[in-house]
Length: 74
Image (tube, rainbow, N blue to C red; front, side, top):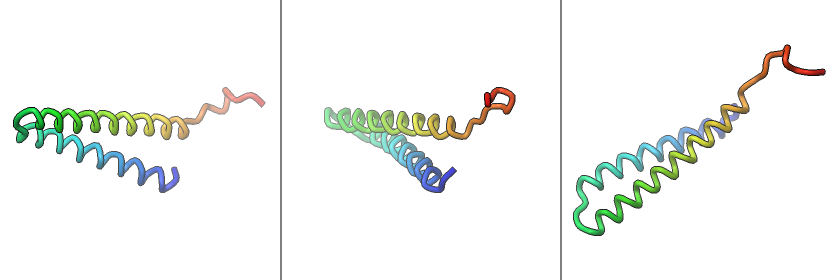
């Protein structure tokens, strides 16, 4: 696997963790209507980044799969 893919997976993972922590902390400390908006925005960002990470991992994982030699046709 190329180094840029490994670095991208690490970066997306760190962004997901940071957004998750921010969502929890802001959700606990936020008050009023604006707190709900910020928490909702952070939650939406967390879900979007998590989806991007899962989709990228599936695509990168599929590229690593190999079929057994007996299934290949010549």
